[in-house]
Image (cartoon, rainbow, N blue to C red; front, side):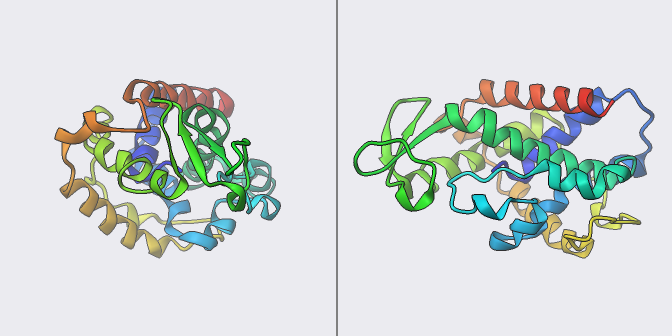
Length: 227
């Protein structure tokens, strides 16, 4: 799934496209809401990301937006809730629209698979290279690409920590605890201090151009959807 930096990039793009007055507090709360789903780790994301338990055996799990909207649609005027929704929307679109062109997953017999337990090999869409599942989800490929691209996205989408996102006044989403944003802020600070743009051309899985286009399209469709 997209990491903190990509989610903040999406948040900044959405705010730049919205035709509404945005105070500093509104922007702070929107970005804080956008970060909140990832305050939960591993299996706890089942609730924070509104996953359908029936899909937990998949390699890529998409948020079930209908579950979120059933509970919080009436609160979307709250910037924290709206930011939270934007996060889930990006994750959903990443799984449904971007993931299929990024990689294809196979079992030992060369059959395309979706369930984690059956997958042993991955074909990288960008290069056609086939690697083991463990190698794909490592610093050499998928996760490493995020690290190599962080500085590029930070500069392109003007991402910063000038506001204290832990200072939100209200968090109506009960699946998370806003106090956990302190840990997120620490992690973001560490990520931003370790950025190295010299490696961004060494990415193995992603395409900068396609990823930026994807973010533009997702943010635009989100704005159109909520208007």
